[in-house]
Amino acid sequence: MINFADLNYLDVKKKFSKIFIDLDRKKLSMRTNQIWKFYYQKGYFKPSLFSNLPSEIIKAIENKINFTRLKIKKKQLSKDGTIKWLLELKDKNLVETVYIPSESHGTLCISSQVGCTLNCKFCHTGTQPLVKNLSSNEIINQIMVAKDELNEWFEQKKINNIVYMGMGEPLYNFENVKKSVQILKDTNGLNFSNKRITISTSGISPNIKKAANEIGTYLALSLHAPNNNIRNSLMPINKKFNIKNIIEDCNHYTKENKNKIFIEYVLLKNINDSAKCAKQLSNIMSKFPCKLNLIQFNPWPGVKYTPSTYEQTLKFIEIVQKNGHIVTLRKSRGDDILGACGQLKTASERAKRFSSFLKN
Ligand code: SF4
Image 1 (cartoon, rainbow, N blue to C red):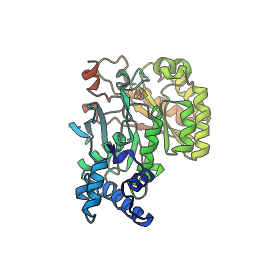
Image 2 (image 1 turned 180 degrees about the vertical axis):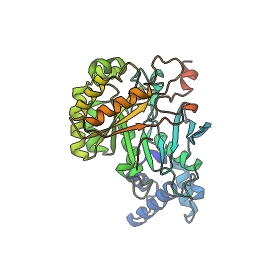
Image 3 (image 1 turned 120 degrees about the vertical axis):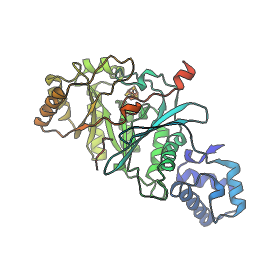
Image 4 (image 1 turned 90 degrees about the vertical axis):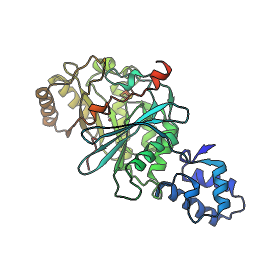
């Protein structure tokens, strides 16, 4: 049975037209709107809660559409207020979702795949081979569960930004991510504007162009290196889509989208944090509108990299700023629960084979 969150608004309308063949177009629209709002604005997770609906309509929906949420397997609360949920999918795979509150806003970091194919050397998720792409409902339901848990339906909004920076490469799960963004952006639904959604990519060239035309949210580029040599050693995907390709794509994206791209760069001691690296990075940044989001490296068990020193980080920032670029240093959040950037990894690998930076 299909899950409601696998359908965007038009899909729901189409589905209902097949379920309620007796309804005229006006009533069909009315019922679609009602149910859409019950689910996405009030958080009702089963048709029996849909008040004011005739019982035959409720029964018909119950028989054709599944409204269930993902199951919470584990919840961890960091001392800094970050919350990490381990969520179980219907097929028993596990994904992680992280809520990062700050004084002014809250950011929810969601996953788009179980595991990842890209094997970035500094990333904990990258050590877990790809198990599957998440469906639209498995993506949207991470948000629904977080909203339930934060009691957001009847209280003040606590999730202001959604970032696709959890497990996986979103642009390798293009169609499902696109559908989930359509649901997120629906003004009668979850109602997040383009500027409240960020999709992070490690540079999947053809899909960056596609995303510019078909998705249109903020884009974050996980660059992490200032030249192809270093990037090849940190991110094997660079051998397929190199920095020159990415610069062209980012140029295209900003022309279509008009917003600056966030460059993500994790500072690794003696790997990519030298003054020379800062200059090379500044040169790349002058090729398209962007701003730099420096990330403190969060070590995880078994990793060979260490974080840059405080002094080196400051030097790096100074050089990039002197070259005229905006730099933000992202504070590490939730690292005590392995919920920080690059630390997400679920237990599904053990079962089988054994990214808050947005500012208002
Ligand atoms: S950084 Fe992103 S793309 Fe790279 S391995 Fe980790 S999850 Fe995959």
